[in-house]
Length: 141
Image (cartoon, rainbow, N blue to C red; front, side, top):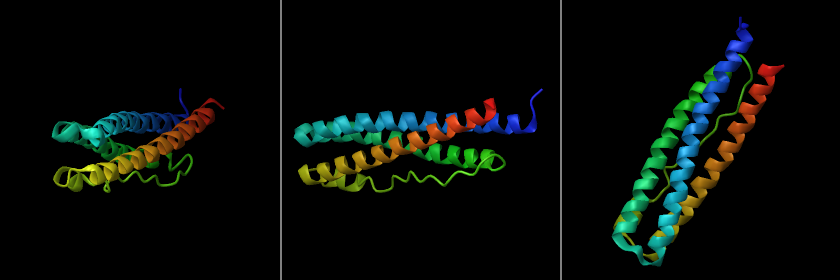
């Protein structure tokens, strides 16, 4: 039979894995958007812009889901261990400029934003993985 602490730790571990699932999906979509962004910069045109935007929008949906999952995770670990708030806001992706001012400068700005968001997602993945590993260590002790 599980103790209350083991149950809380197990729920927190599961919640951290849900966060990671969304973050991994977001990172994969941002990496693909970045690749399409390179094509867009070298002259891909409207099609590459459209495909890139689709991946960016999918990544953003995953990041919204990750934010919700982080709230659940924070609730789950309240009784176990406090974790800092993790911000993965992607509101600065310059979607309007990319579609309506499609050109080398706009494409380069969007590419820089994709890289910035992807780097923040990778950092958040590392932080959540560290937290999950810590929770697993607590559970096993």
